Length: 248
Figure 1 (cartoon, helix red, strand yellow):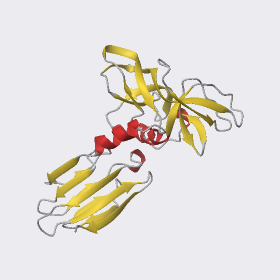
Figure 2 (cartoon, rainbow, N blue to C red):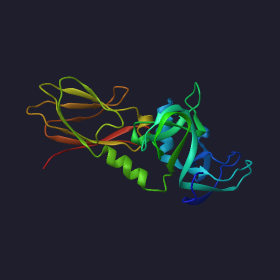
Figure 3 (cartoon, helix red, strand yellow):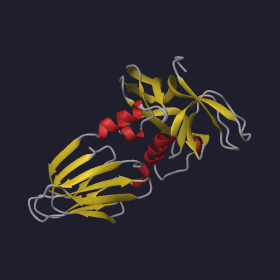
Figure 4 (cartoon, rainbow, N blue to C red):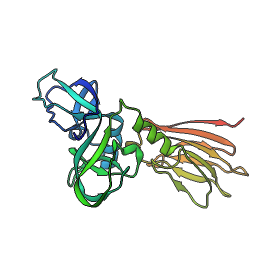
């Protein structure tokens, strides 16, 4: 901890789980767990995305695994964290680093990320030379600033006439105004595990009877958006779902 201007919460640790001072912790079923305890979602980015939605803060106390132990957690504060050797710029986003050779997340190490939905904080100063420790402001889910930053990053629009099928990434602009460009097109959504809470508003701006077929990463059709229709497509962390309607 580098500064004392932090917001604290107190929460119980899951029975049988040990937490160390400085651990990045998340809340699951009302109990705290360190980042490394998160169930593997199949990839490091999927683990980071899920962790970001559950992240509470940095543990300020240690536990021994006994049932019912309470831990004080810094939900918003500036910390000096280990990181892979790299340079940094003020405002760079950070996420828990994956463990070496694995998808599992580190408890006390951060890494750079470009996708706002993976981020749990940001760098607070420039590092022009490679460093293995970085000063970051980490913001838990109880705080609203980073959630608003994520939303602001995605509240952009993409107006495009397609010449081929299109794949969306989790950090693609939320509003997609797409003209299929003369024939039906497939629009493939990002992996479910890395997209919990992500949604897209997809409008079919065709000048003829051309459809947009919205597909899951496995190729299953989530919905079909006809000419002049709009779909709200959202991910619950396991599945993509959609509402489709005509414009008025």
